[in-house]
Image (cartoon, rainbow, N blue to C red; front, top):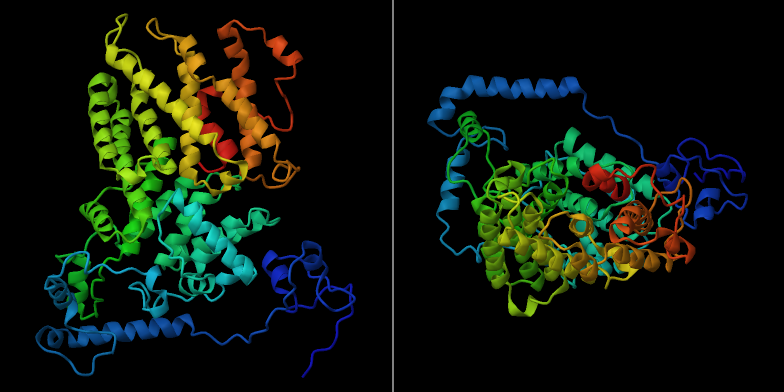
Length: 587
């Protein structure tokens, strides 16, 4: 029966709101023409009517408990028989063979690690079932309703993501032959997160963040349904989402590590039964055969380590993911597989952060204070070894250079501490300070090569590096030490000039800079606010330090002050944490 026509200008009846209004939880006001609603017309969206679906009666909790009790009674009644022989009338999903046989089958495999390693995204056309799919895991047919992107734009966004974004953080390999529809069918949540990252001018960014955040919470905390789709989606969400006002990276880093642990991809195939596995075998519960680790899983776990290490180094509230022998093996497997050049980049980035992770633990526990020169030499030697292992064709790669310069800056921060012998020059410490200065300058020079629109392609790990370098340069500029020359720092790398150049570059991008009241700020708007706040806070002290007249800069117009861009407070004592909380919204 054809539904009755609803007069225009009136709210849609219950259950008749369009898809966009229903997801945004907004009132759906129908147009007089009957061709859509006012909200979709105002936002320029395709107005799609909601499909009415009759809900089926779900099984009651009482029936579920009754079924569970029947299974327990069955096991208790037949437990002696389960130990001795196979029962023909066991439920189909129960197998008294247990996990022991599956482990022996896995141990009998004698092929090489490379031959036993398969890829996932590169074989989407086969539609093989992933090792995490289970009839006990809820299906999420509504995951694609979190964000709507037209098919032609979705393909464009996917091409941009794998070409530009993944070069700075290659945690996944998406072959060029994979289309948006294929990726959407295989990994719907991962696809949604990619689309959300690429829609930089979406007026409903806050709503999409809330919907994705709620979906992650539902999958992790309520349904306890980890999957590779969820893991890749969260990694994308964490690495490129910067428009949220609340800090979330600490929590989400723990969530990432929890998903990795649940999937078990940070460990190799178990050779010994755990207590839980022995218990299930004794109870006759069928055990799934251990899955062979794929290249996709190996990349993902290394990417999670890189995220957790970057967050640990920048925030100092958590520790990086524990490094395991399987993760060490994954470095070798990816290097031998040579499936894509991005794997070589990922290996180099992870190895550099392994060195930084060791230095972080020493500084966190206060051990580096006693013998700073000794530890400096150790970490420099380890980092030099990592640099020597980088293939020649990647030595000048921009991403490799960014991470290696950042590693130099991070390691040599030990030299910023007090000298081991007071009132006496420490040549090794001075060498560390000058190395830190040169590496900071080199990193910032690469940063200045980026165009403003390329900032949207950079992951949070690179923005952490920028914060570290700009703060390190300021600390070197104001460092008071008889053996240290502040004038040399100013002549080598003037921190005010770097901030001025960044501000001027962002001011030339009015299409990205709006600074509207109540609107979620994008990365460029947050960056402009941060650069301006840094300069207006640091400049008075630096002008006094350099013996320059600040009023002359104010009169010649070189100093730009805008009340809209200044944050409410600029505490220098908490700069590394509070400022990134305020401006990047990700700590």
